[in-house]
Length: 129
Image 1 (cartoon, rainbow, N blue to C red):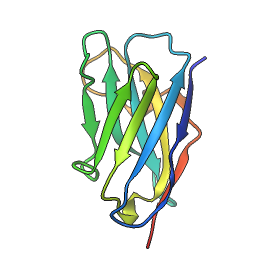
Image 2: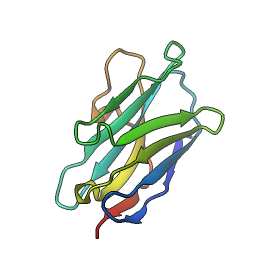
Image 3: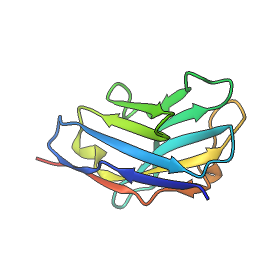
């Protein structure tokens, strides 16, 4: 059974940094995307960053939302089966619950949100002075 467990959330001041972790287990498919999403109070959930894993994508194709480009970095430790989201230069508008999720995906491009079948429990990130 696929399981995703997030950790690393917390409270920081504007300009600070956090690193979120998504520990994965139970994967049985070779082609998949792991994504970070976030949902702020009163707002719809949005995609933040995705990383692709496949037999032919050894570098791990990445995608970032415009709002986080240049500040966030997604990475993967294959041995630890963990995906990280390094968040630097945090802003108050980054405050949200962050979720990691996975979609089995062997196609070009990136899967729509409804393709993500497995989700973690979420971790709160609060950026405030």
